[in-house]
Length: 257
Image (cartoon, rainbow, N blue to C red):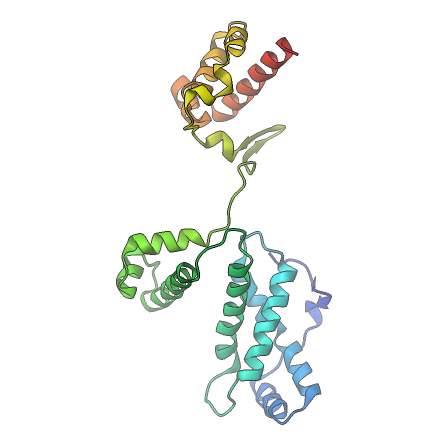
């Protein structure tokens, strides 16, 4: 996610690194209202924000946006940190930053999910992290469900609810100019009278296709098979099925232009 030196106009290569002694001295000054100390302390902990947002790599989120949200969490942590407690600032700040980012992702999810469902999902994620630290192995859904005393079905549904939606046009395979998309791997469960390939004109056009093309078009648009299923049945690769299917459709279109 973060391979660049500059993020949100901040040159991360020049960020200060504070020792524990410096942090404690600055925190005391901050509590006494020293604005310069507060600004310096924020800059000295931006690396902490950078390390936290690495956890959200692979979600397709803009790194600059997550960094800004993480900084809000950092500032909240500074304002609420109790210097009388024998706790390192980072120990207190990291959960605050993570919580702020998760709220941002939850509230900006394009699919609206009930708050109770989201809360259960994030509780499950927290439990997963806790069990991972305790046992040093990846916990199963059953482990999480048992820990929370909730059915595993509810855990699965809640976790699915916070997943980002995927476009059917998302490519899953590329080879040269050939691409296979998610929609190519999805079965069509519509009634056959709703499919374009059942039109009598198309049926007539299919007579002009070679045997392999006819088989592919028939299985794909009459039987509702996926390209992967067709590939397995006729013994060729999915990329070949995709290419033959596109060629056949183009030939049919040309016949009736």
